[in-house]
Image (cartoon, rainbow, N blue to C red):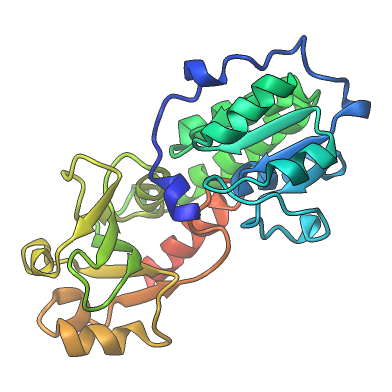
Length: 282
């Protein structure tokens, strides 16, 4: 589900999301927020607002919200469960027409975010701070992440060596045509790689995510392969078996990165960038 969200790169302030305003939101003391948006849920928790969250997506993994009722996902929101929770605000990440229609009919403020870049993440956090009366916390959260990014960028700013050419594999389905979903330019994962000191081998791909044919690997010649949520306990062994001639494989630079934050544009992006920088420096 998080992968589906990551592929949706649209304007944050699309017309479908224009109904929610400061005037038609309840005060903080009466807010009851339902979230079909794991990354937005993480933002609210980081801003100290977990107490107003009354329902979350089936895919929400934040420990602070494990006791919250589950309300389905983007493709299958549980409208009956959502109605029972009596929300005063519904926030989603992506498109869910049935839930949007329900909120319109029930006169419930609704907001859909489409967050897949650092700039859009900052815009989302600004919106949350303004509309949920947590502007200072929003600014603090943004400043904290910007500080982490600045430190990482400074760490390799004076390096005169060419940046390592990195292939980021978001998911891999061995044996299937187009079985490698790789990170292209423009999305937050590409931005985190740049901050961490790497160069995306797909920087000219023209889209944020690419279904990559295995044959293309021999043209790309990545020097580092970074697998997110690898299906293998030892991904290097798999790549040594299937693609022994790639520079990354020959130099034992097939690296796995695991964690709940990897595919979420949320507060955990600083830790992800730091982990990538650490792997690239080894």
